[in-house]
Image (tube, rainbow, N blue to C red):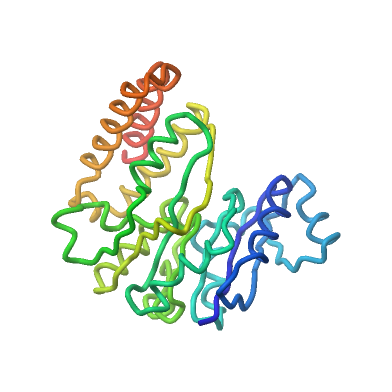
Length: 280
């Protein structure tokens, strides 16, 4: 099967060349096209693209949308599989894409996403461990009772979808989603009796050091998403968040991670307040 990689860019000068090389080194797969969509930036991203003769499309800031920017390119794809990637993931394995798409190629699922690991010893390290364990799985509608909201967990930081199914389900329905577009589509997949694979062998490093303000703003947008898609509340949004907080605290205590323990109440508070404000 052929694969199209779709990667939005914005102020990506520190990531671009390493990411592009990691795409080019992929083995045992047939990449049809790599599409970079550059939102007008203040750094040297466009200059680097031109200097290295890397093809790209450019859009204005007011044209960017996490959902629509990806959707526009995906609906034009003629490949069998579309692969969404964010600019800040680090890929070190030449079989990353092979493992990511293998279950789709084998007809076991309609979509798949990679394991994400943080390189920082912060709270994100533990959230990644909880959300991206070392064991692969494939979920379907029958798992809703057991997994609740986590049945619809999917990430387009490194995720693949069978193109025909993305088009069949009308992608993100033309909606300009500010965040969680991956969960929006995952819900549609599951409720239409398709399966989603989490592939632990497909590894990317995805690391952030969010300030409390950035966390608050991020979770405010997440709250807005859940307000606009309130049907998801029935699957236990509060329970999912509580389970994550409990895991982080237990792991930090076990590992005597003092920095995480000091930050923990402020970090969780920023998330909780942001979510509540967003849901108003």
